[in-house]
Image 1 (cartoon, rainbow, N blue to C red):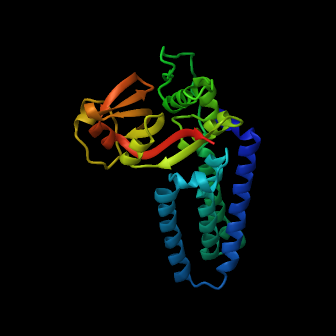
Image 2: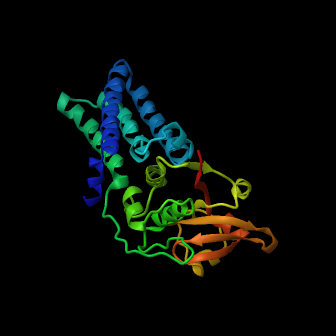
Image 3: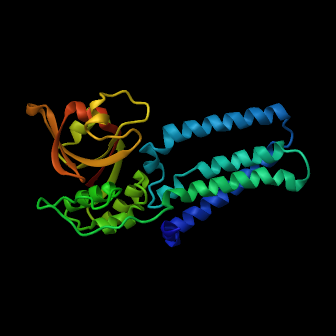
Length: 290
């Protein structure tokens, strides 16, 4: 429960209450709208909503466009629409249920509770501990197994002359058992408020990364669960499927056929272009002039 203490922050609390309220409104609206629906229509509607939920999760939830639609510090809550989908399902489930009012309310209540859990899950868990550490080159190394993203955030900020610490960014980025990109967006927005810089989140291919360098680009890297790759990444390089890591790309070294990276776990290093192509997950975060 330690991590849920962040919900007392006004913006997160307002976003949470707003999403709960909207979920209830959606549930009631669907329940009333489907009053004349037959059982087969309700069943088809349930299936359609599940399909749409899947499309939202894979195509929109983790797409950078959501940061442009909802450019708020509370994006990690406001951009989590799972509760709204649960509201739709709850309305359908209550309409399809047979029996008295209490029996009809049970599936709706369970689905709404599921939506609430999904809303708070990203900030649930223990907060990682940090100890002061900095390399001679000014970039930050992670001091906790799961603090790679806050450490990279510190490096991005320092390279723009904005002082920060890993411990501070662990809190601001809502780091728990890892850090959601929406949490990084929150932490960096808070630290750049009132400065000459703003946070930009983009889905970019390798050519677009090349066009944005030299610079400091925070990348999400790793091996997807079903991704085909050279076994060397899993057997010798230590990557695990489905476990992601944050690094910073600084520049392409075309004459050497590689790229310069800052890995918060090991420091400055070089990756081959093949490494970057295999591990890069398609999203970058950077600080740009306003």
